[in-house]
Amino acid sequence: ASLEACLVDQGDPTADTQWLPILAAVTLQGDSEHLYTIDDNNTYSHVRLHIYPDGGVARLRVYGEVVKDWKAGDTIDLAAMENGGRALICSDEHFGRKENILTPGRGINMGDGWETARRREPGFDWVIIALAAPGEVHEVVVDTAHFKGNFPDTCSIQGAYVEAGADQQLTPQSLYWSELLPAQKLTMDAIHQYRDELNSLGPITHIRLNIFPDGGISRLRIMGKVSA
Image 1: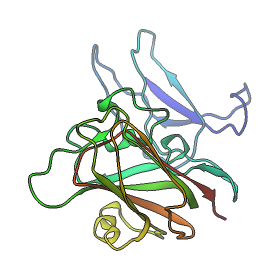
Image 2: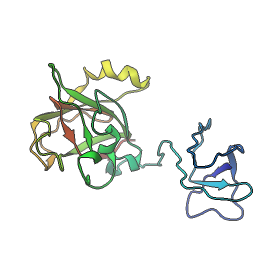
Image 3: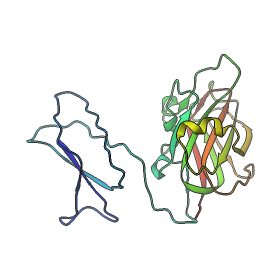
Image 4: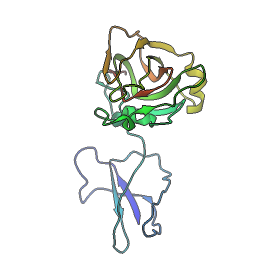
């Protein structure tokens, strides 16, 4: 099998579309999962899979980063995975993955959210998220859907405009980020919306959600306007 990709601004590829190879022909095995790294930093809208000479493929997964051409002033969910938001690093994800809180819709069960292990020592849990674009936040939504006996007691959010740096460097830096949302009490299985409670930080690129002391969050929405 091999893989090609193209970039089409609008609509679908045509007979005149230029396809570029991103994965040279590889040998496949029966009843197996195959994972390949693509060394390519270009942006694409479509991929085309070739199989030689014929046969069956059960699933195709293409992993990457969402890239959108936002305009200044657009109001979007800055944290949404479908817009390009990314969960970078967290303190713990014992029961549920951190990426889940950025997915569309409400969670279908506890496993569809982010849940940390019960803490046996002082401290709290957190997750750092890279926003889809620099923006000014005007609303935060924290959803504890399905978490009834294991929701966090309290949450807070910090934010910062980060110019550059490795993801691992953000962990110590984020301790000193400005407070976007002061500590707020949470309740079980509920949508919590915050507007007036937010501090004005100007444009930011990253946020850190803190949960005290631990527990589960189903979804996080960071609504704001894209900055120039």
